Length: 388
Image 1 (cartoon, rainbow, N blue to C red):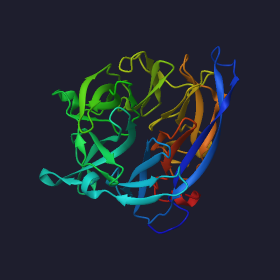
Image 2 (spheres, rainbow, N blue to C red):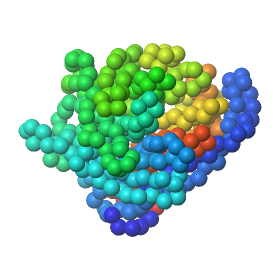
Image 3 (cartoon, one colour):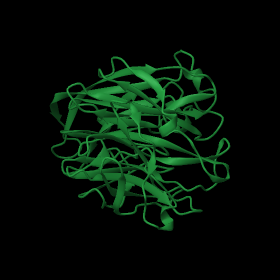
Image 4 (tube, one colour):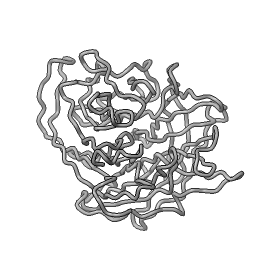
């Protein structure tokens, strides 16, 4: 990597104010929460062959929280060809960072039979309070040469962090029920919810061999500090639209659970009472009934005691030059009763500079501050001409 202004790793920090302002336009009693946005660059550089992607952070709580951010390099001449996970770390709330440090021995590629190489990717760290562990989850990609292997099997992966040694444990996979529908299953790029008893509600998506239609569900898992075990999973949700529903993200708010899901044509949303059973998903809309326009990429949640927010990208003719309209990143408040985005609250979170910003993550740092981490994904060739 050579220093420069291109290929930025960005953090948008949301600092919430204590006041709330009543809104009557969408949902009786809905309040909007005021907040400030601070945009910081953690590192930059671009060598024209690879770029950093998937920067996702987890917070180790304490008087001075430790934030550990994992990320990995992407081969620009391929499609979703990833390499070992790296780590950056801050012990002073982002004023200074160490790294990137590659964890090739524990979070790197592994050789398998028939020339296949396995790589953990789409990894998201999150603090697990019951065991006092920073636990990361993701899934496996498999390659033959510099290409994704044909119709390869996939599993949910996990690893945990030793903050004293600054190391991650060798990645493992979750044992799933012996059912052909789980041939390709994983929890890549999802947001989980940890329950007070330590159980983990982990969204995942899956499909049988030979199918291109994914279903999504939430699995209840148990983690003992070393092994992540599948206990059960809830409703299986899909739509008969190319590739079905994937990359689900879960949030808990005011005693209810909310799930947002990716689809090739539009984003979907649903809610439920227990975190594993949900109403049939429906397309995301604004409060005026117009479709949100988020498609073929992730959406994630920001939760606050007084409000629920969605972070997303969406269609906008102003940004037709951006791959799948994956920039800018936007944030808006959600009406949890009507499952819609309040249009008047939409704000730009991370600006557009040509590169896509669709693969991002949300990290609660403390009670007042939440970080959204994202990298400029430098595909297709030439996106840098817009400033990325």
